[in-house]
Image (cartoon, rainbow, N blue to C red; front, side, top):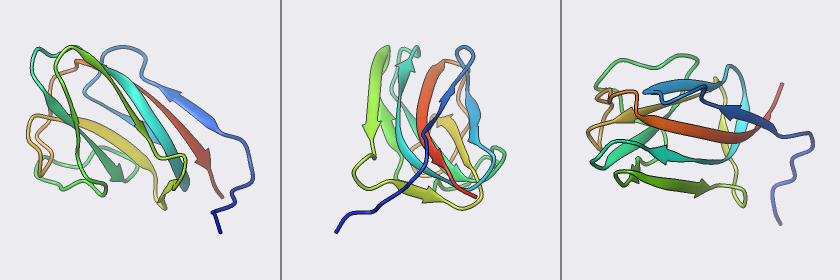
Length: 116
């Protein structure tokens, strides 16, 4: 038996290369993210159940997503949908386990289902 979610998807897109962003300021299911890492080296995308980027040293709520340098990335959660009960915030990090703010060098799009 699968999860049934009724309602329309919403779409977030960073306006330009960025270091972080607020995907949604409320309860939502995350369906997927995609984007481009303009950095020469690999880094990690961290996702947080929050309405603003937390301080450096904060662990993400979902495992860190490694993105290779100067490449596109895609992470699909459509089959399971990850629920965030506060909000969805992303940040690129130069370290894997906890947030260490990276440079503004990631273009990120996200698909999510807002909830009340």
